[in-house]
Image (cartoon, rainbow, N blue to C red; front, side, top):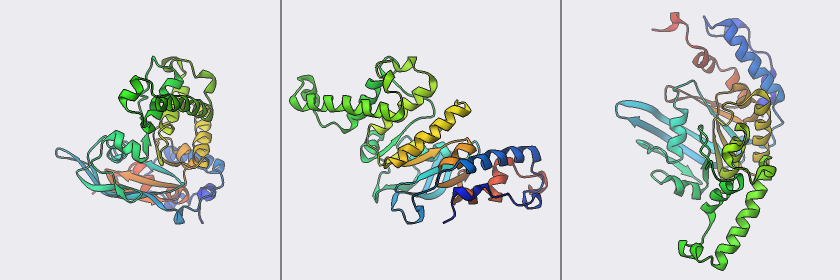
Length: 307
């Protein structure tokens, strides 16, 4: 199987690139992708034969007269890390929000293990197994790191409100289990020693890790990460790549929206590319890296090609 490890092969000669492409911009993109490809780990999962965990079918989202997402279809296979990329305004976040219940699709459907989740509320989708983080961190600032994770664990609790108020035996058991699980998740993302620290006092990178831990607390079938590397320095991005690989190795399926091409090429098994609300490409990182349509989408079409 062709995979990201082959992505460090040399790009075809410049004659095969889009005419008029900015050489310096192309060189920068090339360097990023080659470094990422060289760092990509061996892929242990044959994604072609993986079960379809999520199916996005002909998803369309309109805001008044604006067509933000146009008949987009793709799937997410169990056990893979799928990247969703595209230039600014391509429709990535709209697609992400339509999948997770933030937006209601105009048409089309989203299936999780064969069951439609279209039209369901966000908390219902979370309970069904599709958890997400947000581009803008959404933590409870005055609550401790542990308390923020325990909030996520509440999605799986079965104690009624009256039972919680009177502290029934079930509630006490679930509370104890939540604290233990919360600490385990903080350990998993590398910030267990900051469990009692208010989330607003955590460094930015640790806040990102905390948000991931809280999403994992819902025990998701698919973890959806919305630009988790936003604001990170290169060292923090390397650490994030390691964490995402660890999450997948622990049995989770990951959907990743990210602008950083080096990170995406270095950590994903497959990539879906959007442009102007439509799907442009869907392939392994090697093929995406050399796809002339993708290069043109990121670097811009030369004026001579515009009809």
